[in-house]
Image (cartoon, rainbow, N blue to C red):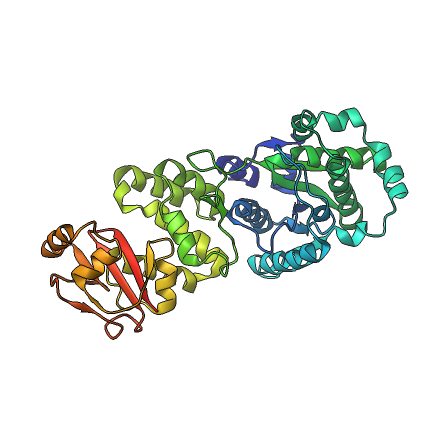
Length: 410
């Protein structure tokens, strides 16, 4: 497949500014840019599809520029429902540095990274109105989808003018770096076309853009959101193990689509995994490949192996080899309680709400349904102490096959 055909096959093309872009992507070497505002000190998994697409274009011979919006981040692009909170300049600068380092690592230091504050900070308000605002009609701006949706509830001039700043970024990069293409998520289509229009009207040149569909889960939520919280690309904010758990639980109906979008696996390999998914879904081979490819790309092979190992330990129930740090990581979110004194097993289960009554406790212990630190325990009177806790601190109780509890000696 040529590049454009591959992008279409992978589901990475939603809007395209001009049919001639197909030939240019296939046969020329273009300078393109993708941008993001530094609203946090790390990108999240929802950004990752755009970064992978940028890497895909770079592998095909195109030159990537990754813009971190130190200027636009101070304003905030319009949201569909309400205005964004203004971020302090010091926070924007801190966030910008974190994202710059992250992107540089992802591209092995080979991506050109720019900050639009560098060419915006010295532009006066009057100069901006004359050099940019003069070329963009208000009716044209009002017709933008995101602006239309906000007119009924109200939109500030700062948000309204955001598209002019982003359009000016495209113009600046076109003139200074021969950047002829902007690539973004589909929610940025209006801002891309503003830049194309500004370039055409002001300097009489043709620029291009295409957008990628926003990636959603099976429930229609943005990919990478877990119970309202972003899954961060920074492993200090979201561990490789947490990423692994999210990806390995990808719904069967979505996993092949994600393999196309988020990985560099070939069409032949993805079609093989699709066949495996249909013939042997319980093996979750496609989900395993998705987790392996994403985590290895983001954090390296060792981090993937560590996440896989921790997952296998939890599945097998052999938790006695875990370190304290690994225990806290693996058992995030399970019922956790403090332990203040030694107790026999039956009292321990009752006192900490693991069973509803002593009778239920005796039945579960007698049936071999209770494990302590990975070992089945069938003795009601077994004494749980600091000395037999993992690291003299942790007591991991498994009830049945999957229900875990974590006690921590104080």
